Length: 305
Image (cartoon, rainbow, N blue to C red):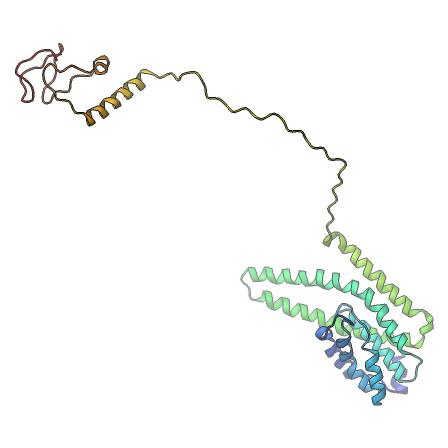
């Protein structure tokens, strides 16, 4: 059908379709909450409208026709605009294609194709390329971000161009026989493809936590815990510990209350019990406990201490 249109009347050249392709990359450059992507869609169609409708009134009517509501994934919008180009081309050459038909094709294709674009591009292709580039970047290679940027744009541009051309060629056949049910088949095929891709990715991207509760039982408070008591049994101490404690007490007593050492000074009971010798400067005590010889610090003579 495209060859017949080229022979009989106005047709879109490859340069015209390339102009639409370049503008279509900015589909979301003018976005609004009422009609979504209609501004970017109409901006993309301007080169084709100027070529197909030389009359200014026809151009205004075509622009108004393409300012209706439109919203889909920006990449899978390429086959939709290809089909629309073919329909506009057929209408410009006198085929019975009205505004409702063109808008119906757009609405019938944009919904199912939107369900394909999100899982394929946002959830599969882009994360895979990003992971590849990040792994190279973490290894210290500057090729990581370059590889991600180049591969992503090559895939994106190739998909936009070739799917637009595929839609343009298929759209010529649809405009030839609108009563043959091809529009319904395309919409149905796009719906099946979108649901198939989404269903295949549900297990990967969707997590459902299902924890059924049969019944709830509140436990009763038990008796308070009894505090642990100290062991009432006295702690047994060995003879070595007794001697160490006695020596420490004597050392502290001598430091704070020094006593003079002379003959006849009574020996402390605990020292005598423990077998300590009397502390006499410069002299030692004999076996009977008497001093041997006079000492400057003691009285003359030897006797029992």
